[in-house]
Figure 1 (cartoon, protein in one colour):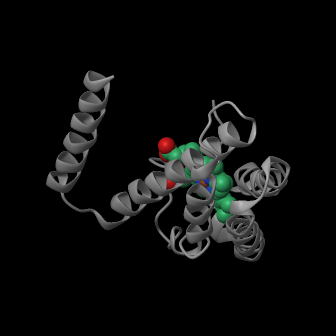
Figure 2: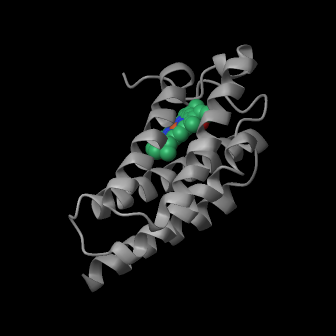
Figure 3: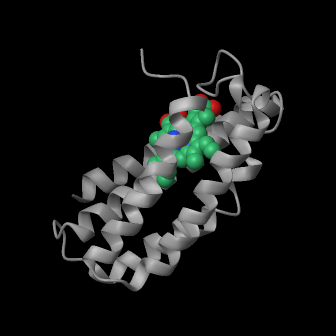
Length: 150
Ligand code: HEC
């Protein structure tokens, strides 16, 4: 266990150092940041899922994960500046070509993420409901604006 934590921390630190060393082409950094935030969102939602399904005895963590997801409601709209797509990313051009549809997908996520934050103290059924609503807005956006897996 100790080894595993140390290893993970070392990898994370190495990535952080390499990342800062590799320096900046603004958009690549934005795309990497976007991926990091998305991965954090996925981590919080799967953590809540494990709690709500009773797979782990950490009910007291639910509101922390839910609050973190709520905070991403204020971030997601910033993650897609024009020019931050391209072949090196999974962000499709439709994000900028269909700005109206994309804004609706962002707004749906914001509402569901804020509702998730409010449901943080709920029982497992309330958590599951909020999680299902939020999950629909993840795939609602991915289906149209993220490059599908090969
Ligand atoms: C408004 C659109 C939108 C919403 C909402 C959204 N995503 Fe994403 N997500 C994207 C796009 C676009 C990408 C590809 C980004 C890139 O490659 O630059 C992505 C990438 C990801 C990735 C891959 C990150 C990586 O390793 O590169 C994960 C994981 C992810 N999203 C999880 C989620 C989860 C979980 C939710 C909901 C809680 C969510 N996303 C909501 C648009 C969205």
